[in-house]
Structure formats: C-alpha cells, structure tokens
Image (cartoon, rainbow, N blue to C red; front, side, top):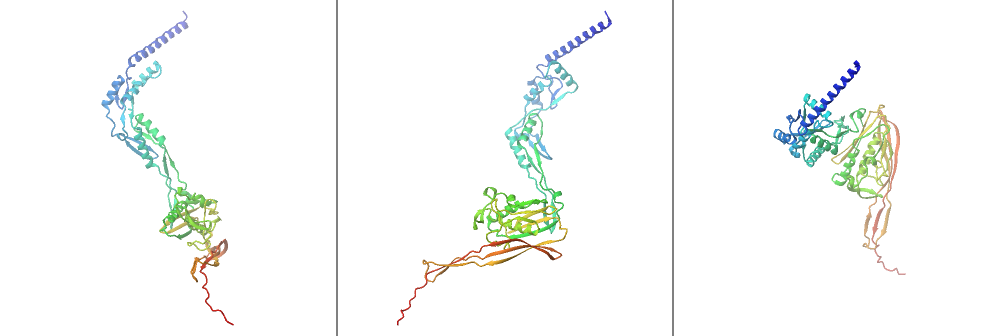
Length: 454
C-alpha cells in the first residue's frame, strides 16, 4: 500500500478515536451531573458542587445567615445612601440561588458542557446569592433618597458686603430619575449585589463665577419704601423682587419685566391688593408689583441703560417723584430696557423692613462719567364743580370729592464728568389728569323781606 494512503488511514483512525473519546466523556458528564451541580461551583464561598438543588438550598440556608443587618448601597455622582435590608424585608432566596447554580455550565451541547466542566476545574466560580425584597418598601426608600438628593442648581450671584462687591460661587444641582434607579436597584438585588448605581443627572447653573468676572462696580442703586403691614401687597412685592433678583443681561440682551415675572395670578402665588384697573384703584392679583417696576425703572435709568418701553400710572404714586413711576399690566404694558454696554450687567433685588432695594452692577465706566436723573413738573389745579342738593338742609355744604391736582412732568438724564454736566437729555414727558373737586350745597335760605310800598 502506498505510504500516503497509510498515513491518511492512520489519521482517520485517530480522529474517530478522539471523537469517540469526546463523545464518551460528554456522555459520562451528562450522566454524572444531570441531577447535580457541577464541581467547582460555589455560592458566597459555600461549595455546592455535586449537590442537587434541594441539597444545595439546605446547605446555603444553614451556612448563610439571613442578611438582616446587611446594607444595600445606592450611589451616584459622589452621593451615597445605605439601605438596611431588613427595612425592605430583604432575605436570601436559597432555592432560586441553588437553581441558578444547578443551571451553571449546562447550556449548549454536550461538548460545550464538557468544556465548561474543564474550565471549572481550573477556575472555580463563586456565585452571588439572590435576594428577595419588598418592592413597595424599596420604592419608599428610593423616594426618600430622591427627596434628599434632588436639589436645584444655584447660580453664582453678586452681593454688596461692607461696600465691597463679592461674587458668591455657583452650586450644581442634581435630579434623581426614580424609575430608572428603581429598576437598577431591583436588578442588582435580584442578582445578589449589595450595591447599585443610581440613575440621575447633574443640573448645571445658568450663571457661573466666570461669567461675572468682568463685573466690578455698583452702577446704580434705588430704594423705595412701602407699608409692610399691608400684608398682601408686601407679599406681592417680595415675590416679584425674588423673580427679578439674579438677572444677568449680556451685551445686547433686552430685559422684559413681564417675561421675567410671568402671569400675576393666584396660581403663581400672587395675592389680591390695590392696583390701578381702568384708571381706578381696585383689588387685583399682583397689586404692588408696580412698585417693583418703578424701582427697577429708576435703577435702570441711573445705570444708563436704554429704556425701550415704559408706561406711567394714571396718577402719580407716593414713593417716587412725579414722572418717575412705571407700571405694567397683563402682557400688554411692559417695562423693557436693553444692555448696550460691552460687558454684562447684573441685577439684584432685595426686600427688607419695608424697603425695596434694587442694585445694578457692571464693569466700571472707563470714561469716568456718571448719571443723574432730574425732573420738572407743572401742577394742574382741579376744576371745582358745585351743584345743589334739595335733600340737604338750607345752606348746608358737603365735599363729595376733594379732587386731586394733575401734573405735566418732564424727566431728564444728565451725564456728569468731573462734577460737570456734559449733557442733558429728556427721557419722558407724562401727563397726569386732575380730578374734579365736587361740592354739594343745600337749597338757599328763603327771603323773609317785606313788600316795598310806593
């Protein structure tokens, strides 16, 4: 027989013998471990190889005490919280764990199972023990974690301390995704892990310290007073002041007070207080907000910001000079101004002890100029209207309406350099109508004279 044919025949015999050996070994493995866990499998350090699931479960229950005082840790972004397993009815599921140990290495065909068995002899596996728990109690604990961890971001802000500008550093916020965190915690516990990564995200602040670095000067400050015993009006002023506080205007930005405040409604927290409606003083939600508008308007003028929309009240208000007021209403009367500077400006607003203080900060004026606001006005005397009322006594006089003076007012901006007025520009001209003085008189006394005789 030729040599190459002998070599080919020998190869076939060796191949068939090797195949028979593998099949035989796999058959022996299948027979030996069909009812028991493969050797080399352990659970939390407890060897369970060679045991059937029931035996393995009993051994695990004997060797592993219930995890009453063990803790399950949830963490994310540097935050961490521990949950005691007994608080969520945590317990080891010995039977389910034994079932998983029994199934280990038995997937695939006999050859794959043989390879798994060989690997276990070289590198034994130590499995985790499954944990059962109360889903409802786990959800309650994660809600508590969410309540503790959820924090809004805090913008960097500017404050005036001892006449010095101080930048307060920003803080990042955080929001926990309850549903995703619950799912990740559930899967971790079911898989026997005592830790899970929370699902959440960091909330970045809108204003950072770096944004405010160019701001180094108090450009303007304006203060108005109010009666803080009028609770509803005080509440509205404080609410609007808080909304204005922390406003940053970059170069070219337009400020809209209506947009900043949003609707003044009961649903947005405002209360009823006196406000002008159709030129009459009536109770309305947000009464008092116009004092914030007026104070901000004057601060903007002093900061030399360009006012592009402003409306006066139908009558002068007591807390500013005539012609220096501003009103807003609904979404149709607004206060708007624009930052035409090359650097940002920052607005702070504060209510304290019956005083509303609004400050505007920015970069120092390079030309050294400052602004002064002045005003002139002419008073308009009220008309006097008198009429007779027969229900009154003879000669009786009553003041039905005391009337009110009107005004024509002009406001000017003066630019001052080295204590000298370099320019004077009219900002506004407002007319406040007078209110008639109404006097009611009784009928004239009857004459008791005698007839003249010729």
